Image (cartoon, rainbow, N blue to C red; front, side, top):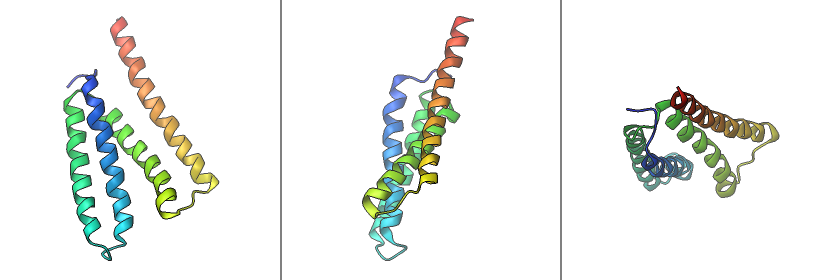
Amino acid sequence: MTDHPRPSAWPPLLIAIALEVTATLSLRAAEGFTHPLWLIVVAVGYTGSLWLLSVVLDRGMAVGVAYGIWSAVGVVLTAVFGTMLFGEVLGPVQLIGVGVIVVGVLLVELGSHARESTEAAS
């Protein structure tokens, strides 16, 4: 593994995030075991998402960066789609929390680029 991910690491990461969000929202749609067909979407979504996350790592993205982006973007998108699809309400404190998550992901990504630039200059 290298600390310099290939550009080809980004597409599977984005698809992994989409699958994870779909699986998580499907948990809500399943309403426990009331609508069990949604559980198939849950299983396929989580399995595919984790497999693609391993592909991202194999393509050189640092585990902290990949997992940080995957989980944080997943949380934000799940919160947004939860409000749109299920009428869930995000209060002011929750919205601040979502903002903090977004800033955190940006800092992790910027930090990885800053470290790469410093190492390249050495």
